[in-house]
Length: 189
Image 1 (cartoon, rainbow, N blue to C red):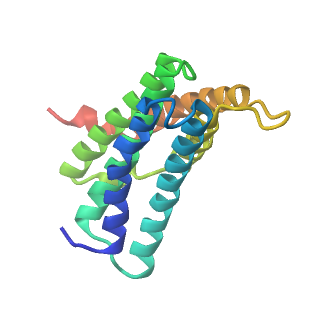
Image 2: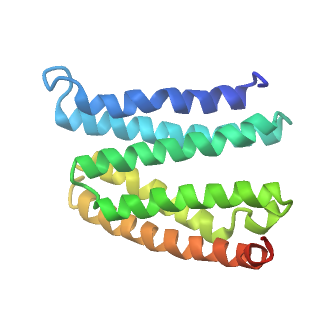
């Protein structure tokens, strides 16, 4: 495992997950509910920013590695799954929405692994639709984590609609990837 800044930032995202989840279990006398929401939102947004930053640094300073390429999406999926599970527990997201998003991530990760093993990883490379899905959920999740209204901005209402849009995009992008892999699936014995 190359020890470079991009990989350290990825490890930082993974290390932040227990703190992110744990913030909601702190004694209310330590951290109020509003502050729990704020701290969790800041942690999640920081993780999203470091995700972008580690990729930029890796490409800019030629610090890419096979280990980093493996670990980065794992860290992303773990943070998103943790956030969705927390949001389900807080009754801010329907369980079916979390199941759709998490299930798609597991399915597409497995599909990508299989496609790489048979030498067709480019067939399921990240698509524009996948990027739009990711952007939508990365906006929806912090809004739902923050939860409190900001003036006339109803974060629960807006966040709920955005996460539903993300769930629909999740299904559409999964269908896109499965369609790309289908010809190869039929050829395998």
